[in-house]
Image (cartoon, rainbow, N blue to C red; front, side, top):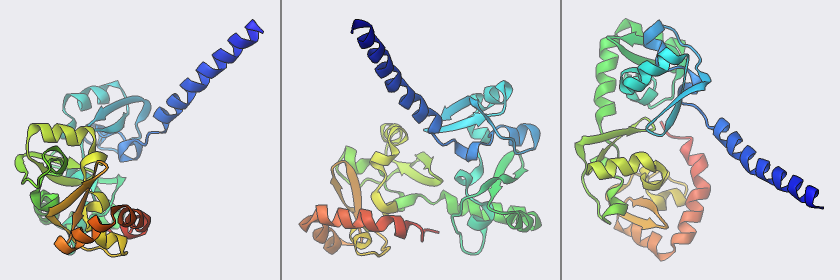
Length: 260
């Protein structure tokens, strides 16, 4: 019985370790697993090695080899794609769409990496790269939620304008933070501080609508920040927050697909 008990204990210990290891392996790498350094170092899109990885600002990157890792770790910003990895032509084109990109479709211009959604976009880019880059830079630099600090809603209980010197790109979107402390908090727990439903009006999302929100009208419930179109929408939310949140959470997966 003693031997059996020990055997069971060993199995239990292994069972506790294996899920953790699997969870770590299951973490999705940034850039679809492509090596961020290889674009500039080799001029090619090269798949990284899962065994050679680096973490930067909450994202995991696979590097092609030890030299690529060394250079990336020394200066990550040098190698990361412009515009948070969004398609340069979509962002810099007529409509300013924020489309994801295919890391295998890229250009390096003046030592900077630009990604595209499809080969057709690259062909358009090659006709007038300076124009696309200039327009995309201008659009991407505009901060989300009107430049208000997403962290201050919870840290200070107030809507506080962020400072450009504390800007931070998170999930291909630029935010202005109110302080170095706020910036560090956002980097550590972005899901905690970024407003729910892509900063749209929570009451509107509960009704199946994508209404813009006023970043000065907000509520914090159970550690989550919600923004609203106007005071009336906030009052409606506060009358039955649990029901509004339940409906909004249910509607959001479908509404989210309409994002451009």
